[in-house]
Length: 395
Image (cartoon, rainbow, N blue to C red):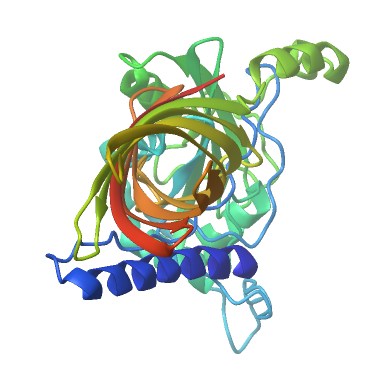
């Protein structure tokens, strides 16, 4: 993680450094550079409706939480003694952990979490705010996403009677929502799972929360996990076997590894002898991870020559890393490094930072807002400040 962060910061610093040097040569108006964003946690492969989400690595803080020192021991509830009696959880207090999403927009998780808090409040619970929830999760060193045992410990640390958490993923064109509820009195955990579309998402989450969350003041016997009306888990006989679920997971969870992009780019010279070049090309990328990709680019270049405009072909390979604007935002900041060759001229080095806007699950609109480019021609080296726009399609 630290190496990836250093790489991102290094690329951004190099982009700003080259841009500043280019601007100093001709002193044009400075181009604002986008601020770097925090590194998101890797997005796991979305599971299917037949199987719950796979286990996630521990040690990841909840949404908008600061990193937790992994060397510090995890906080555990203090066992009561005669001198230190156990704190009594408030029977009307409830903590809702932000929902974890798998392969769907983080906005869906925000809607699910908000509806769960609203439903818990309508039942008569005093729900912790989002900031209070994050602070409690950090103080108890809760891994994210939490297991039922982690959820119970965080519920205890919050002095709450109940704790709830949801996972959301997509299968066969519908959202799958699974809610887990922990009870400080030792009952549970309780589960509820359902499917919804975009229009009835709130209604389904409301019904599932009512199914899984006992009303305030109701004491659930210790060890109870299938109380009627509290979202009993599916009977084992109704759960598909792992062998039966595996083919569906392979069909619905296939990652879209390839990306085809069509780009148009303008290059503005920074030397005293101003020049303008324009490029139009295609790039094919392979996604090593959801955020890191490598690709090959081929473009027609309309250049200013010694005797007027000339045409040429520019080729380069590019490494790209995308970081989120915020942990819950679908927007990304692409950081790019490219090395190529312009025939009859020489090597070309391009650095870029910009903004990627998802138009759909497959289509992105990407802008390179700051892209200093170095052109090494036979008699000298030129620097241009480029801007570009592209449409990318995953497949």
